[in-house]
Length: 293
Image (cartoon, rainbow, N blue to C red; front, side):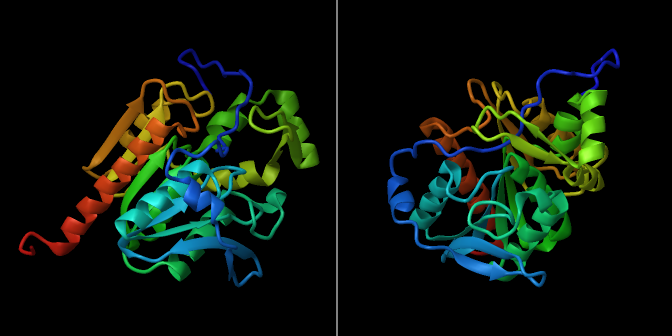
């Protein structure tokens, strides 16, 4: 990433991904009793695994991170909270992730956005609050831009729009860029997984077609952005950059002083659930109107 003097940050590349940790108290019933997934088959043949809970509107659609899946702590904790509130909830795996079909190497920001749009269009009804974790925060914004009439609110958790350009490409030296151009894929060590992280030329090139932070982001629904100040994967000022680009009036950033990228500690989960309830309750009030009891 370019610094103040025009230099490029060549520090080790860290990838915005979410890793499941031990569930907070109260979530074990979701993890231990996870039913087999259902599958949504897209016109191109991709089969997207999903789990859905019925309930009232606005529903909640969870969008996971890079190389993550729908069994992570945040997704299951939010599902438990929504069930307790009688609220509809949907979680799913992007193609090439988790229990969905496809090869991860074939995926990119555009295809994963299309997966999210297919889930929203086919598996949900009425207004939805989107919760985007890490890369899911980028997908969340892209979906809101594509379906403004369906989105009642956004909740970003260490949201990472433009990470392919700002956090990967900008930190590659000339040799690494040449290797990616020539071979189509490079593998990077991961702090979160024993297996290396594959980065494809397709991921970088497609990401450039979906960059958001270079100009206004015309989203007007309420937005809440939670971000840990100790996030070693996605710098926490990213949340401030997002907020500065959003054109809506109801945008709030909540920095978490000792929070890391995963934000999966019990206190993080409690804040996440409380913030989601705030967004959903406000959306219900707007839907009822000032004259309704």
